[in-house]
Length: 186
Ligand SMILES: [Mg+2]
Ligand SMILES: [Zn+2]
Image 1 (cartoon, rainbow, N blue to C red):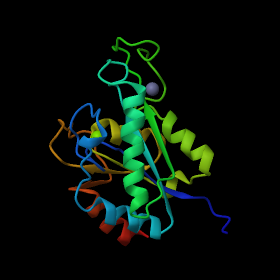
Image 2 (image 1 turned 180 degrees about the horizontal axis):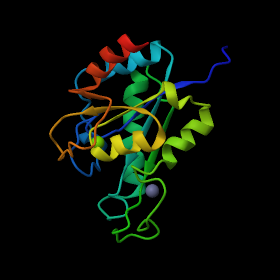
Image 3 (image 1 turned 90 degrees about the vertical axis):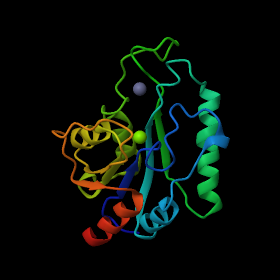
Image 4 (image 1 turned 30 degrees about the vertical axis):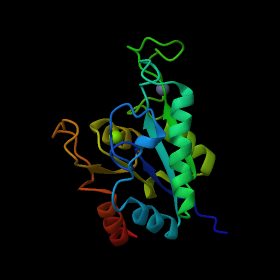
């Protein structure tokens, strides 16, 4: 349709889209955060791709299995589908170098703030990084954005310690606020 490159919003899962319950294992424990459905619809309406990028070291640490993770992610995508939101892709990193479960207990190139998940999306969809965003609630998400050249939104939900020397482009309360800011940028 257009020959310009795609714009994308890369989204952290836990603490941004759904409640961070720490090592979520059961689809029944998914809690969609308030305002996120409207925000995702807004992004889609404005032509953004939506890609979830999530560290899931619980696999390497043996807290849940690949099947558990697939069930949780599958349910989440179903919930979005049921309200007309198509998530374009979802990437996860199952690794942790201090994990106990082979073959996931390795130092990898995909665990955020490493950029492999972002770069896979960029290549697959022809994404223009300079017109794209990362939304996360951990410093590693902001460092990931910086490492990738993405503009960054830091969701300040007080779940995790924040190093004030790691400065995002925007501090926000939630995804709804991200959509209000992007509305003024585009
Ligand atoms: Mg998070
Ligand atoms: Zn990894």
